[in-house]
Image 1: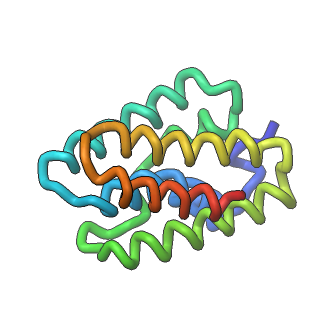
Image 2 (image 1 turned 90 degrees about the vertical axis):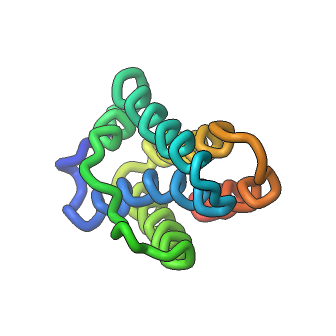
Amino acid sequence: MAKKGDFTEQEWESLQKGVVGAGLLVSLSDRSFFDTFKEVGALGKHVAQAKQSSSSELVRELGDLHGTGFGLTASPDKVESETLAALQTAKTTLESKAPDELEPYREFVVEVAQSVADAAGGGEAAESGAIEKVRSAVA
């Protein structure tokens, strides 16, 4: 099983940014002030649950997030481009360093994106499109 220590700082940041970015990308795809609070709460709750109960040690360690990897004023376009880049980097890193962790990571980021989408009603088409972008980046 891979652990944080098996990765460079930059690789680890990409792994974490992919997780957070997956949720933020979905949240920003259909922005509503009150929905954002529900969606961010769902993101935090999902990550915290994974930290406690995932069968993957890597996913549990990724649940120990510190910061988002995005600035407070990051535009939706920047969040999208940086998230997709981070997910693609994470996929490449896992393929070469920890191939057995790729599927748990893939499931984790897609589940995070889906839990954010499910947190508030409305915006299904935009959110589905964002989830598909996440899924494609780690496919």
